[in-house]
Length: 244
Image (tube, rainbow, N blue to C red):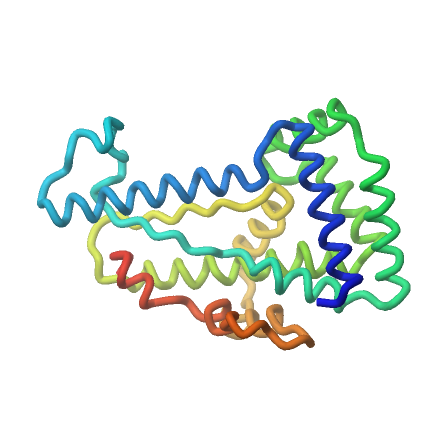
């Protein structure tokens, strides 16, 4: 990543942190809570399997209500580094300069705590994922930075839908008996797009056909990064956790 794009990333992170501080929330707190719940369920499941019994409590806490079944966490969003690289590469020189100036202005002139809370309440109280404020924000992004909207919103919608389909297919063919439940946790800005794509009955590309095209970047991936881990479903992990 170039020095200029790195500075853009730093400014964007600062704006996010400032907003979170004003709202007194933790960035990604809902995802952290979901992960901890899933981890606890899996830990109690393995404990019950090894001991052939289900304890009444674990560490002085009530056992997980779904402790009798395995639970695995599948990271269904595209890695941030890929999204940032593709977003930066989608812009031409003028677009990159415009983005830098926009981020700089946004970091200087930020909305008040009251304005942020009103915006958040409007989004959270809307269960359809089609809040007028959310739609307006996405429309403004599409108007000012059409390629960024495509990379940050539309492509990630496609990525998440592909991962949902991969996981659902794995569960459908699993020899494990009993009820199979999949819980999907996504951000408000993606609810509408993901739901529309999942409910679309027309023929759509298979996950292994669409994922390579939305994870490719012009720059070489870091040595510690495996593209196959992003595109392919990790069946070894599914077997290890007892999903199949």
